[in-house]
Length: 141
Ligand code: ADP
Ligand code: MG
Image (cartoon, rainbow, N blue to C red):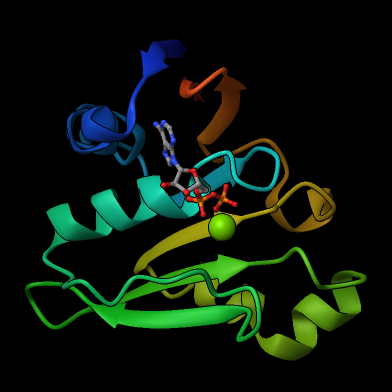
């Protein structure tokens, strides 16, 4: 299935998150976010996390690689940015597979180089620049 949101401005990100989350998480809690630097991946994840009951602390995990938040039930929500990881060995060392198999929400920025880890089984959200707005495409089986 493909779902597209066209010409999404900053103020529409909460609405897109609210439409996207139930659809993308129907079969699981692992969501992959692709798009250039500045495309809005972290912004969209922040809005999705807000829907899960996470507070305002959602920031880019570029340096920590993994941020852990708590949802409204006190369950963990994992937010990963794999941009700086060189290979699957580094991903393994950081425990990415454990996060993925935890059963909790995992929002993953930059999954692109880790096809062995993710295969084709998880919903992918692609964000693209459209001048001062964004095009957001959700693809899932
Ligand atoms: P990424 O995580 O993909 O690198 P960020 O979420 O950090 O991108 O966002 C980069 C910039 O784009 C931020 O300044 C943010 O405010 C802006 N931005 C996010 N979403 C939108 C949008 N829908 N339209 C315009 N600008 C946006
Ligand atoms: Mg980011």
